[in-house]
Every structure is written in structure tokens, then in C-alpha cells.
Image 1 (cartoon, rainbow, N blue to C red):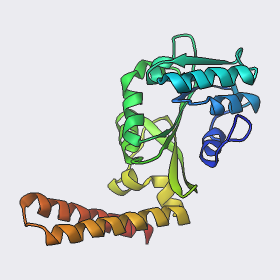
Image 2 (image 1 turned 30 degrees about the vertical axis):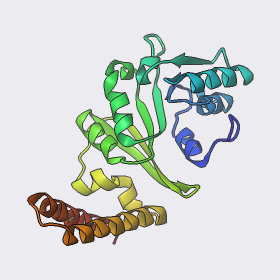
Image 3 (image 1 turned 45 degrees about the horizontal axis):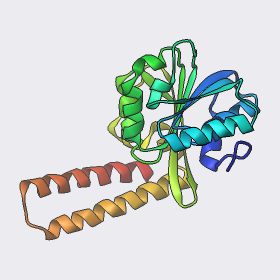
Image 4 (image 1 turned 180 degrees about the horizontal axis):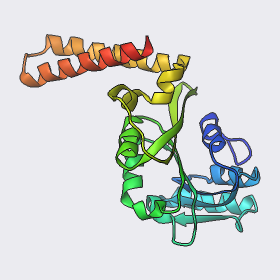
Length: 231
């Protein structure tokens, strides 16, 4: 992977960035994504944010190598603290982290989202946390994609400002993903059901306690919820 050829998952993230956007890529690593977006004429400008020194230095070097120092600013900062007043950021990309970590980044510096109209988020796990945050903070799901790359399953969520209502199943599974039921989606949740059933078997063989009983009932509910969604 490099600034000209992204991984499959980052390519998908890039595909949702509006043309002419001013992008903040948080946790930018080598800054491949913002370099790609500027090279392709998708982003007009970009900020690459990195909290760790090594990746920050890699991003600085990459931007310099690509000849994009006039279009991409690299900042060493914690999450959205990389966004400064005057940047006029319109789109934020956060990829390659767990859903709860992405949510904590969004919650820590909410003022950084003032001019932002689109969030493109790629959680490695627990996308549910992002949907819950979106519901609570008046962001609506515009699109969702699930894909497999190198044996791992990733989801991409595209959020725009607005109200939405989601059922319990939609919060867990994703409303758009539920409606398309792609083979990757069905495979992922079939595996999850199998895992939950294994846990239930272990609980059944363990000492009967109120906690174990409650956990067994919770898993029964989740299994039924998901089975109905992927049927």
C-alpha cells in the first residue's frame, strides 16, 4: 500500500469523500489516505493527525516525498485536537480503530466538528458504538459498507448531520447492511451466533448464578435478533 494504491478498506473510505472536501484524517499513520485524496483531486486540502511520534514522522516524510506540503498539514495531536480553528474541515476520516475508540475521539473535541458535514468512519470492531453515538448526537447514517480484506471483516459508516431512528437490530447490525445482506455480512454474523452459542454451552456447564442466568438470557435474545435479521 502507498499513496497511489490504497488498501481495499481505505479505498472504500476514500470513495465516500466528497469532491472538493477539506479533510481531516485522524490517526493518519503514513498519511497515505490524505495524499491519495489530494493526488486524485478529491480533497482540496487535508490535515493528517497523528498522536504517536513514529507515525507522525512517517506522515511528515510521506507528504514531503509526495510534494504535497502546500496542500497537506501534518500535526502531532490527540485525535481531533489536530483540527485548528481556520482549517474549515468539511469531512473527517477515522479508520483502523475500534468503534468505542472512534467514539471517544469524536466526543473529546466536539468543537472540531463545527464545520464538518460528513464523517467517514471505519471501525475494525464494535461498529454498534458508532451508531449509538450517531443517534445521540444527531448524525444520520447515509451509507454503510461491509467488506473482507486479508481474512478480516471491516465496516465503513458514512454519517451526515440529521435525525434518524434505528431499531435495536439496526443499531447492532446496521440498517443499510441489513437491507442488502451481503455474503460477508451473513458470514460475519453467522460466526458471531456460533460464538455466542459456545458461550451459552459453557454457561450451561458452569455454576448456576444470577449473573450466568442473565448472560445466558442476553445471548438468547441476541441470537434470535441476529437470526431473524440474516434469515
